[in-house]
Length: 308
Image (cartoon, rainbow, N blue to C red; front, side, top):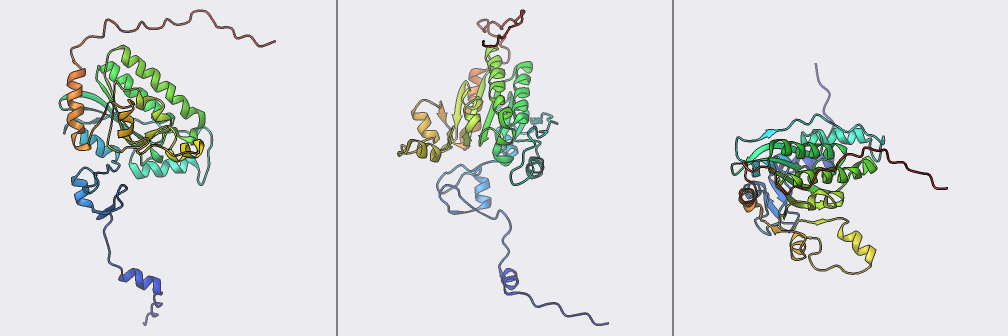
C-alpha cells in the first residue's frame, strides 16, 4: 500500500525550518537600553540590567521570594474573583480577560498577599502583579489589600505593599475608584494603632494607586528610575502644551521634590526594609496612648432635604 507524497513546503515554511531554534527566555531585550541580555545573567542579577542598571519588572511571586526570609512564606487565601459588575466588553469579554490573566499569572487577581518574615521580623506583605491586566486595581484588589490591613491589625504586624500598577481598572468603572477611599480608610486605622506601613513603589506605579495607598506609607521607598505619577508624562505634556523637566515622574525626580523618602537599589531593598522594620516596630509594643479617638457612630438619622 503506497502513501501519497507530502505536499511541498512553501518558502516561508522552509525558512521557518531552517531558522535556528532559540529557547524562550534565553535572551531578553532590556527596556532601558534596548540591549540584548543573556537571560541567565539577568536573572542572577535580580532582573536588573547589568549594562544600564535598569530595573525590569518582577512577578509578584518572584518579588515575594526576593524579599521574604526562606521558609517563612505563608500565602493568605484569596478565593474571591470579580463578577463583572458592568458586563464590560472591549476587544473581548471582561470574564475572558480575567480568565486569561489568571491562567497567565496563577493568581485570582492582580495582588498576592502573604504572611512572612523579612530579616526575622513578622510582616504582612502584599505585592501587586503587573502581568494581571497591568496590575490594575479593581474591587478584588481593593478587598484583598483591605483584608491584608485588617490582618496586620489583628496580628500586630507591620504592613508592606509593593506597588506595580497602571492604576484603577476601567472595566469596573466607579467601583474601582471606590477602592481608593476604602483602602485609605483601613490604613488610617493601622496608623491609629501605631503599626508601620512601608510603601514600596516600582516601575510603573500610576493612576489611582499612586493617588491613594502607594503614597500613604510611613515611609515611601522606590526602586531607581521607576515611573511614578497619576497621569503619564505624555498626557501631561499634551495638556500643558509645553516641555517637562528632565527625569520628570521618575523616582530620583520625586525624591528631590520631597515625594519619596528614599530610592533603593533592588539588591539592597531587602536589607533596607529589614533595618527600617527593626527601627520602627517593637513586637512587644502596646497600642499608642496617643492614638486618635475612634469616631462614635451616628445615633440619629441624617435627614437630607430636597431643594425647593
